[in-house]
Image (cartoon, rainbow, N blue to C red):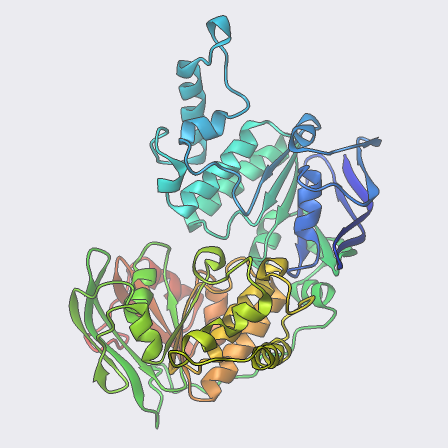
Length: 507
C-alpha cells in the first residue's frame, strides 16, 4: 500500500498542497480528481520525485520513506507517465524506451539486439505502429503519449501514476490503454489515474479521491458517487441546470440571422475535400470527428495558416483571402489553440503582458500604451473572466492550465473579433474551468460574435453548440442540430455512415 499524509507544499506565495492525503491499494484503480490548481499534479510530482514536500510523510507498506528524486521513486516501485512528456524529443524511440534499463552484453556494452526485441514486444503490446529508430519529435502527439505510458509500464511498477494521458489519444488508443491498465490491476498493481474526462472515471476506476485548494476533500467508491457530487466536491457548488437552448428544428438553420461564413466545396490538400458549411452571426458551431479527419487544417485555413487549394469561402459578404494569420486577425478573426505552450501562452512573460498582447499588437504603428492602461485593462479581464492569479506581474506559467486558457480567451475577446476560432480549447482543462469557458463563449455569441469550436469532447459540443458538423476523412459527413444531436447519429457520422448534400444540410 502507498499512502501520503498531511502533505504540504508551497511555491512562493502559492499554497499547492495544504495537508492533503492520498491512498493507493494493490489491485486498485483510483481516480485523482480536482480542478486545475487543486494540487493533484503537485501530489503526483512529489510521488514521482520531481518535487520534495515541505511537510507530511510518504509511506510504502506502512513504512515511512523519503522520495527525493526520480531514481528514489523508481526504487520504491513507482513509475509515472506525465502529461508533459518526459521523453527526449531528439532521441529515438528505442533509446527513449531503454534509457536507464539498457540490457548489457559482453564487456558491459549495450546489447542492441536484445534491446530491439524488448522494444518491439512493448510496441506490439501497446499496438504502437512506429519505427523504433524514429526520433520522438517526428511522431504524432498521440503516439508520443502511448510511448510515454509504455515506458512507465516497462518498469514493472508497483504503483503506476497516469497524469492526463488520454487527452491526446484516439478512441482506439484509449481502449488499448484501458485494457493494459486492467491487466495491471489484475496483477496487483496500484494505479493512480488523473483525468478530466468524467466518463472515464465510471468506466475504469474503482475509487475516487477529490482535491480542492490543496486539500483532500472526498474519498468514495465510484459506485457510491455521481457526477453532480463530484463537481460539488471539486468546486464547492452543485452544477446549475443547463438552460434549454432555442432550436430551429432538426435542420438547425437559424431564422432571422445573417450568414457570416459560407464555405463551398473547400479543399486543403491533402487532408480536406469538398467541405460545405454555413455559420450565422451569433451562432456557436461545433466541429466533431475522430482525430486526424481534417478538423485542425480546416480551422487553420480560415485563419490563413493553411493554404486553401479548392473551393471558396465567403466571410462577412466578401471572399476570404487571408495570406497569413496577421491578415486574418486584422480582418476580424481570433484563434484559440488547445496547445497552450506552442501556440498561445508566453510562459515567462507576465500575466498582464499575456492578456494585453493582442491589444498592443493590434494598435497603430508607433502607438504607445501606458503601464497604467495595461494594468487596468488586464485587471478588468482577470476580474471579468474569473482568472485565478497571484499578481499580475507573475509569469503566465504560474497559472493552472484552465486559468492559462481563460487568459488566452480573454486576450482574444478583448480584440472583439467577428469570428472566434477554437481548436480543442478545453483539452486538459478541469470540468469547472471548462464550464466557465463555455459561459464566456455563450456570452460572446449572445453579443453577436460567431464562434466555431472544434473539440475532441463530444459531450462538450452537445452542451454548447447550436449545430455540429462532423468530419470524416476530410469531408463533412453530417450536420447535427436540434433533436438530431444524439450519440447514435454522432457515432454514425464519425464512421462515415451518413452524408450531406452540397449545401451542407443533413441528408
